[in-house]
Length: 80
Image (cartoon, rainbow, N blue to C red):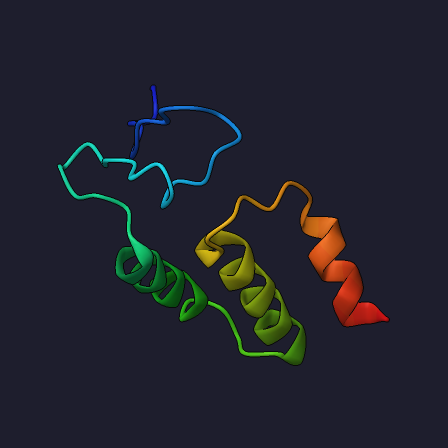
């Protein structure tokens, strides 16, 4: 059974928020929608310091006004 695609990717390598990607249901990906999705998914997991740190990194990556090419560069700053 084929899994239904939730979003249409206009260009690979460009952030969904920056490119104003539209979901199949017509909603546009924006910071509030991202936070809603992220909060819903995070609430399914047990809270840990590592999860908090990972969420902070993901927020930084997704909500940045500029495209961040490598997650490892911003992650490295946290482990220094």
